[in-house]
Length: 278
Image 1 (cartoon, rainbow, N blue to C red):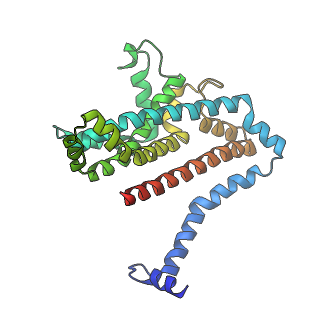
Image 2 (image 1 turned 120 degrees about the vertical axis):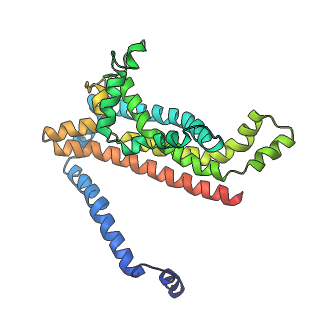
Image 3 (image 1 turned 90 degrees about the vertical axis):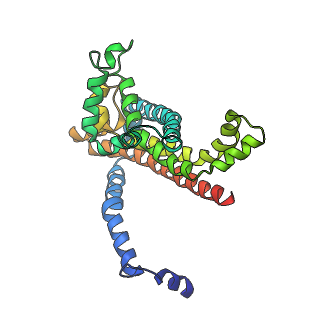
């Protein structure tokens, strides 16, 4: 015990382990723990039947279906094309590469409301892209999918890039000397190494999409039972002064987020063990 405390105190440029830890716990409690606890405490004012009715009404279930379904579909699409984009940015040199690389971070920097308005204008029936599509995008569930795909792309690309940069080309050369084709080299040598990072990026994009609000409400149409997302339904219940009902739905989303975070941490731990074993 004494040895562990001694090791924790050594080589620190901060004021001290105890003080730094105290500030850390205080800050996290004020910013994260207290607000989340308030949501759970407010939900506990409901009886179990009332809670169940609040989180399983047809309108709420329809919002779950759209939110989780569109988030999952967007994360899957980003996993595929995010891998391609990360590969191109790491392995190839081309004009304006830095500009393309910076564009990947645009969903991070762009205010979500601005992104929602821009996507709505572009994909509307008379928009730059929407006018050439045979189906309607804006104000439909497809618009929700487009918005959630837009905001989730950077998570996959930025998770894969460091792994690709650390991936030695000697592995590919060794596979080629052994007679492997390019497809076999990617499928049997490179892709297994990328799987942990790819799954982590997928989970991050999925988790981010679940809580997205600003970029979705403009393009979704917000029609109950059709194109209404769960975060918007929470806002609607708050505007109706149904605080317990709003926190009940929020608790469901929080538990889902906790499960995703647990999965992300397990994936990262698996990735570290895998890389350490290699």
